[in-house]
Length: 300
Length: 292
Image 1 (cartoon, each protein chain N blue to C red):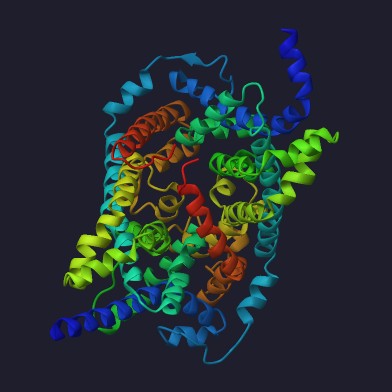
Image 2 (image 1 turned 180 degrees about the horizontal axis):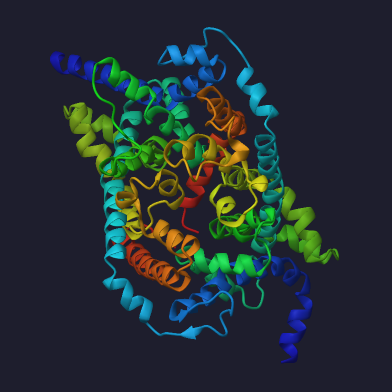
């Protein structure tokens, strides 16, 4: 006991450095986790956590029978699947195109241009799309010049998901190439030379040398992305939602906000959020394990 | 062999052209926004796609720089960016350094931090904690609840671990305490890494908007991104929600020239810093992909 005390006394300055950060983690990261108990209560903000009534698994039972929650879950999965199978491959293709460029200056120039949108806020990105896609926006005035009727891009439910994917591609596709380009730059040039001597065409080189070189990175990123299938990018979707496209665009995260913060259904919304968090945790951990098993380094 | 060479040349040309088109799609919106913001409203309403103003005017900028809500929101954003980056850097680096030392509970605390990357309590429990710690309607609500990024913390700790231990040991033997060693040995040696993480945090603070909507009831405290959302996005689809009197121009949504000027002003710091951002962030992506 005295040993521990002496050790702590000796290390007191280190603890002083540690303390502010530790307090932050306890208060703003772990206290909310303790606060998840309100999903087993009928939380009433006026009496607080200690006096609210305990209701067990009532909210969870209700959640799985609530057609709205199921609808929102389906929206979430649909958007994620579109992101994974459309936006993700786009980065790979873009990386392969950049890699095929021979002029380094031109390559640098294109890279600088396609990385830029990554640094913009979602407000600015969605703002730019709104300006182009609104009723009197550029796209609709071009359609009008050809005598076509306008398209309500921002309010039509059927267009919500494709536009979300399009915006994600615009903002993140370029940035997503970095990791693939790094893998591609590690390919031994001797492999290409050997392939050329063997008479391989550019396409054959791509198929037999380039793609195998980045296969590991693709598989790892793909699996890890599957692990976060319930995360659809709250900030982005929230900006695009309006009363007209809500049925197609409401996802788990936004549902929690509307239900809990705006409608005051605090305990029920917390249960939905917790359900999402726990499933997400299981998925991310299994994805990490799976990625490791494929012989690639996981994230942790 | 010859036809193959021709085919490859054609493919190369196609590749170069296709990339030029893709890159233009990323850049042209900015040229358009820039041009519209410096054009008169009449010009904009007559022509569809403007890439260069035919009559230059800075009227839009005059209007937004005279608009009190816009100026004050810009002030809020500058404040939280400067203050927030400082707070985040201090908290992250001091904790990261403490965790490089072999102290009691080091492993448990590290696991605790990694767990927060995998699981978070979600919006409502965090909201309740922010509320009970008295941050609602205070600008600190945009800084404190997200002050430390667990991921950045882990990466910075890794960076500190790579600094040779002899340096800090020498200082400790000379009688400096850990805090002094940290400030005068470790931090100066980590300047490039600190610059990278300062930029990481700064861009995050500059682009923050949702915390503003969630925690700030008083529209006069909103950061510029929230005001931009009201000016450009909300007016389009939800007339009732977007009818904030502060941001209306004679009860009308602001004209397109003013919207464009606002977007450009709110993006300008990012555009100016872009060369540094590109360099440092690309490095950050690669650090992140190396297993810690």
